[in-house]
Length: 319
Image (tube, rainbow, N blue to C red; front, side, top):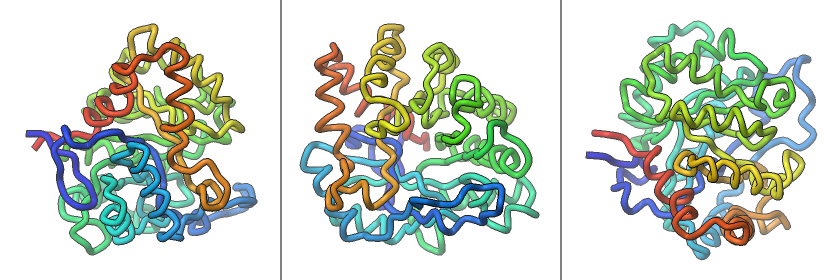
């Protein structure tokens, strides 16, 4: 039996529907333990206006969106009670995340805790509930803020891998945007797979996130060939990469026969990105980007695979 774990309980994968697999609905970047080695936050990622985000979700539902992965973890402003209320008010299935973001947001207890203790913490969030509630996470996240996975971030990545092996939950990854030109291929996909596979995680249960920040199509196809899911999740953020270029890359990826390994999302993380404040909103992918994909030869079957089949497959947990 397979299920998808949402903030309002487990659902059958067949009812998930159109899903964006990397978004934020609550977050607060100012919670980080910053020091002189990190740049000043000129435009911090903050989402605390639940009423506005609920309206955004209602708009997303109105254009066909049915589910969303919320990628905020403990230590970065996750609010699981708000997520549950947003889901109830919008009818959008929300899959919450457990795990660890980059070093400056890793909770204090992780510095002294063993890998086993950290893995137990994550397993509890997936099977018992998060933040003293019965609301369970449905996905694990592993983040790295440097061009190499080492130190505390590697310890946390190892714990994430162990929790994934125990629970069967998939892992989504975060590579540093600032280091995307320093890292071969633009992301840490190879390094993440090395850490995870050492703990017995099947690459098919791993999402290589932020793959469209500085995309090397050769690396992405190779990662897909190894089994990983490849996520283009900053669609619409043209200061990272033009959407025109994303379409070209996705076309090459699909032509190589790996459209079954693709996921799409927009990574909204600032209130200024909401439609209420003049931004593109959470529905940019569905109302703007998808029509452009169709105009470039993506038929309805491939679109359904990218938005429905692939998310349902990676988010499913065997019980």
